[in-house]
Length: 282
Image 1 (tube, one colour):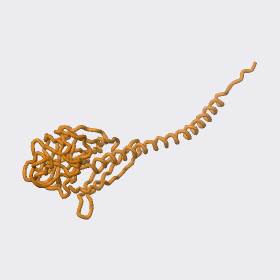
Image 2 (cartoon, rainbow, N blue to C red):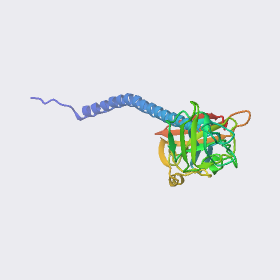
Image 3 (cartoon, rainbow, N blue to C red):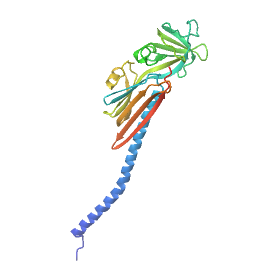
Image 4 (cartoon, rainbow, N blue to C red):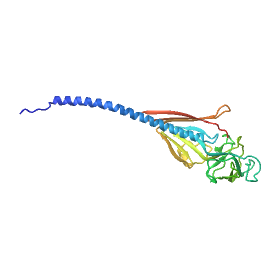
């Protein structure tokens, strides 16, 4: 009987045609998959950058007036602020003689009351790690970063309790402290402490630091912040570049913080910019 089969030429032709068909099929499948992967990376980058800027804007919006400052050092862009957790209006004026205490600016006061209460605290409340600030102007002699008489020193025991009336809180300080300047609107701010953002384009990271000691010089490195007792929290990765600028206000316009953040990953890149206005009225 005659044997049937493929010749070598037929086999080569079959393999070649099959390879061409598989190549076309791979191209039709790969291109949509690559496009989907690229779109996913872009969406992830945009979401990450947007979340980071929103997080920073929230901190900036709650900053003590005139406490935002920015600087750069090599590949690091730094932004620092003093974070407030609550605010009230203090009773200004004469001697301390009754539960309706008035803040005395002529001496180291140990107790005074408010006319508008703190609203974010569960009373009675006490802390040795928080700060109170009045009339921070961000200038020599009235600069919270320099430890001027606009902010209580670190370690001061601050106690806030219910006052004699619904709108009054009784504030006590141990040891007593002398605030040298009046606030035009009699505002007093309760602070949790300083917060820094370091954006390092060389390390491709954006990191938030909190819980460290207030310093007159703005910290510009992770080592400095960690050495001052800071706790670090990563805000964003894949950082290609960033820029933080603070423009002081004028009688005609508010202060302005401009945040620019560019993220990149596997050939995809996105850049977002956000601006935050600050009234800075002490």
